[in-house]
Length: 426
Image (cartoon, rainbow, N blue to C red; front, side, top):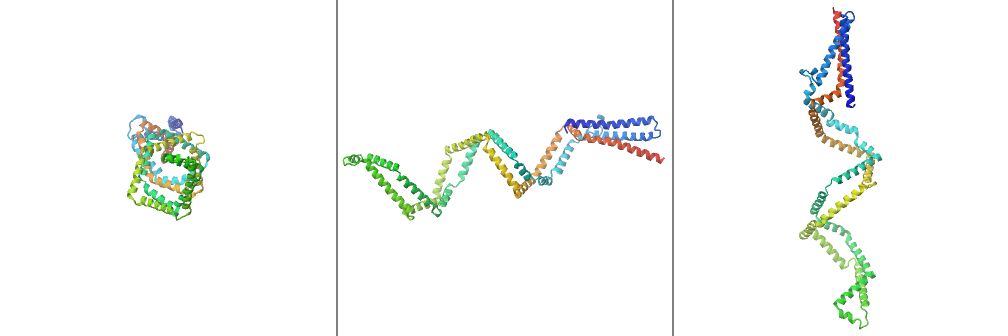
C-alpha cells in the first residue's frame, strides 16, 4: 500500500475504535439515567466494562509509540525509548530467521538458478537483450579507459612474460620437433625445388647475364673491349655464360634432391643438429640469444607496436559498437543461445552450476548475514524518533487498533459475566 493509503486506513480504524468507546460511554450514561432499573443494569455493566477495556487498550497502544496525552508516564513511548535495542533485536531476528546459511541454501535449491537461467536465455528476446547490454557496457567502458595506462600495462605485461620466456630452449624444442622423421629434409627439398624453378626463369637468366656483363665490364674492361675484334658479342657471351651457370646450378640442385645421402644433405643435418645442441646446452650461446631478446624488448619499436595494437583494437570496437549489426552483439547473443541450449539439455551441467552456487553461498553467507544485520541495525538507529514512530505505526498501527476494538467488546462481555455472577450470588 502507498503511504497515503496506509495513513487513511489507520485514520479510519482509529475513528472506528474511538467511536466504540463513545458508544459505550453513551450507553453507560443512558443506563444511569434510568437508574440501572431492570435490564438497564445489564446495559450499565456492559458499558462500564467496555469503557474500561477500551481506555486500557487505548493506553497500551498509544504507549507503544508515544506518551499518552503527552504525560511522561514511566514505560510509555516504548518504541522511541528503546530504539537501539529494537534495532539490534530486529537485525538479529532477520539475520537468524531469514538469512541463516541453511535457509539461503534451501532457497537456492528451491529456486534452481541454472534451470531458470536456461529458460530465460532460451527466449531470443532475452538473449538479444543480454547482447545489447553487453554492447552498451562495452561502449561505456571505452569512455572510462585510460589509454596511456592500458598501453603501459600491456607493454609491461608483454615485456615481463617475454623476459621469463626461455627463447633459446623454445627454439631448440621447436627445431627438435621439426627434425623428427627428417622433416627438415623435406623443407630442404622444397627450398631446392623453389630455387631450381627460380633459376629456370628467363627473367632470372637475363638478370644474371646483365650482372655478369656489368661485373666483367668493371673488372675487365679491356677484355670486354677485345671481344668486338674477334667477332664475339658481349651480350651473347653473357647469355651463354648465364645459361651454363644455370644449367650447372640446376644439375647440382637435382643431385642433392635425388640423393638422400648427398654430402650436402649430411652437412645440413650436422649443421641443424649442432645448432639445436648449442641452443640446449651451450650457456654462452643461450646467453647471447637472451641478450638479443632483452635488447629487442627495450627497443621503442615494441612500445610503438603495442600502442598501435591497442589503438587499432579500440577503433575497431568503437566502429563495431556503432553498427546496427554489431559483431559483439551477435557473438554475445549467439553465445547466450548456445549456453541456454547446453543448460537445457544437460542436467549434469545444471546440477554442477547449482552446486557451485551453493558452495559459493555457503562461504559468503556468514559475511553476508552479518553485513545485512549491521546495515539494518545502523539504519534503524539513525532514524529520528518521529520517523521511526510514523513508519512503524503506518505499517502495523491499523492492526493495533483492533486491540482497542477487541478490548471494548471483550471488556463489555466480561462486565456482563461479572454482573451475572454478582446478581445470581446475591
